[in-house]
Image (tube, rainbow, N blue to C red; front, side, top):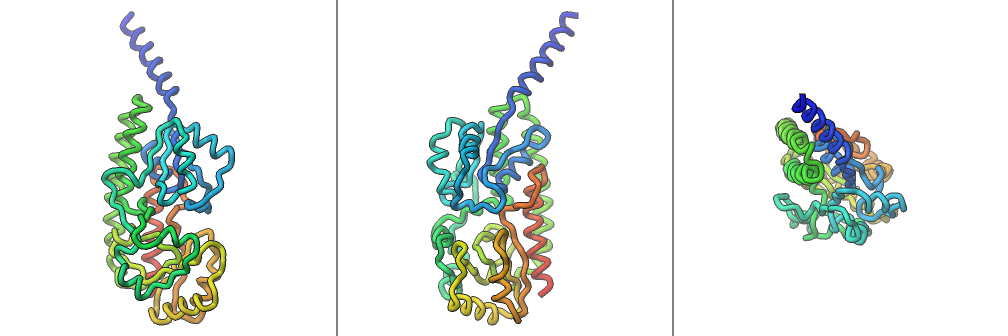
Length: 309
């Protein structure tokens, strides 16, 4: 009987300890929240700092955001190459923070790598504020769009969570194993579908997809960057339209929350298909399969448009 009593008592204490070890995990942007949700599946739900549609390059945090950032047990942000406004706030945190771009094991790209000669001759950039962040040679911080990088991030999160919440360490590890397996299966599906459209021309408004393109044998033909909210000048629009005319049947991908008015102006009367690509997964539910739905959405949107050319 004493043994049974001690066993029951130990179980009560263990469940109490697990309940007390609730970990407040916060990420800067939605894609990192989606990866964290896969690791925390069935245990807890991660939070995200930036609301849908907010720019990761410059954002004015509310006082409540700052308080949450200071109080969170774990904070993950892409890093200074994308979220400059977070640098002083992260420096003042007491809890653990991880600048994702500094993780060992990541595959990192720099702007201009795959397109250096092509860009110089053909791309026409509107050098607005946003594009200075994408100058040739600077880090391409859209690193979450490579499945292998998502696994590196998930492994770091699982390790950090297990340290703070050892009672659930095995569950975090099991979630990581399941995530790895599902990503492998998704990667095979995307490889098979996108291999058929690798030679079809497409244009993007924002150079955000190079990691995804490199993974699946795609290559955009041009970038129609318009800095900030300002409409590009008539000369710039004329140059972009000329690029589309030269390309023939092609796809132009814009992204939320921008309205596709410029895209419609550029493509009027041309054999151009318009479609929306969302690298941040703004409308995706943050659950165990959210990150996979982000990649699946990008792959399906690209394939559906390019298959129709």
